Length: 144
Length: 162
Image 1 (spheres, rainbow over the protein chains, first blue to last red):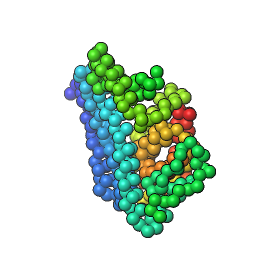
Image 2: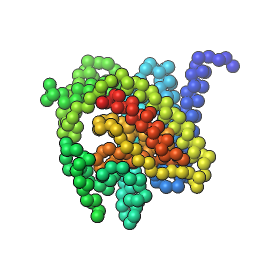
Image 3: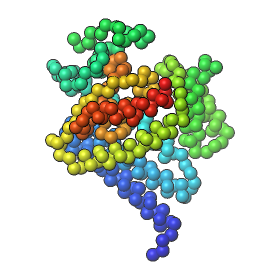
């Protein structure tokens, strides 16, 4: 069997797809295996990033060699990095509301902010942003 | 100037992204991108009243490279935890990270970076925007995790934004 540039290229693309697929599987497995919602969030936000990344790199190498350079994979990466953390934070905030606000002493399970104000999911923001937040009296908690 | 272009950087970004989406540098595409780049910041200006300051834009390249490398490492670390660590041995908990930076853009990027990197997800911000609530998947030493995030990411972001 001759080792041609085409063969090397195909090997590289195949390797990237396999690596990406493996990380995708591990991320999805983590989603099923980990014990609660907060730990489960770690699976899709990390392992899947490299899963998608591997597939995108493979696509980039393949089409670059065939039709010339395209920006689309870079844009997919950019949009993924913009949206994935926001989704994760929104899921986490919804979870905090359900798991910690309904519970009587749930707030104690979260570490303190070390500030005069609590976490934004539970506490109101300071009245005006211009004034010194350290001098303002803490607002009452919305649920107290 | 400020009335027509409330966010010149956003205008530039939108135009460039539009041309990249078309994947073709034509005059028509560039013009349409420029029109979108002017109209969208005008439509969204009330959501983003202050113009962010970029003090050292070239540092962004260094930051992106550091974060990309960390993401690759994070994937391997998390994959190993998922595959080989029994659930009962996981030491996952919340950590408070006090913030030194006041720039909303820097805090947003920091929170996003934390979510994408090793075993951490940012979950909430304190009501006065000066502390970040971060969940660690497996960390026996929360103080080390906190200091690592502050030194590796926040210090760099403060150089870029303030």
